[in-house]
Image 1 (spheres, rainbow, N blue to C red):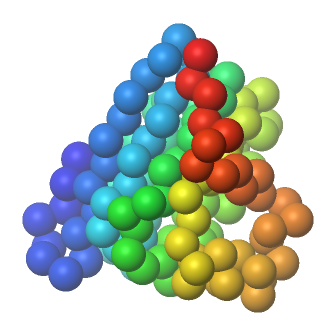
Image 2 (image 1 turned 30 degrees about the vertical axis):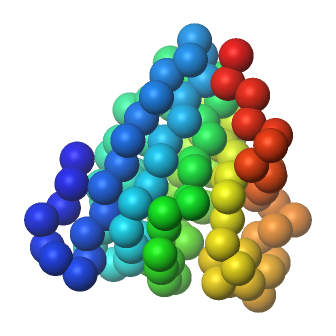
Length: 116
């Protein structure tokens, strides 16, 4: 699951609780690493009702990373699965705000994670 390319590394950890999956993202979601997230989450969508992306340790996201999240959001919604973001840092929150995606994506707070 890890991308061994030094500074552009993205690592994911998944934790399943019934039909809910928590995906912890570590590193950078940028050109070259978005495919890692897309491949991992895409295979979880058919068997999940809810996927929560924990962005606590995501240090940077560019427009390609944002595009990956939007693609996953559309795919999950079409499959009857909800995709939610949690622990979104200020820089990424600003990016979501500038692109007007805060009104589209579901962003929840740390204390709102209920996995069961």
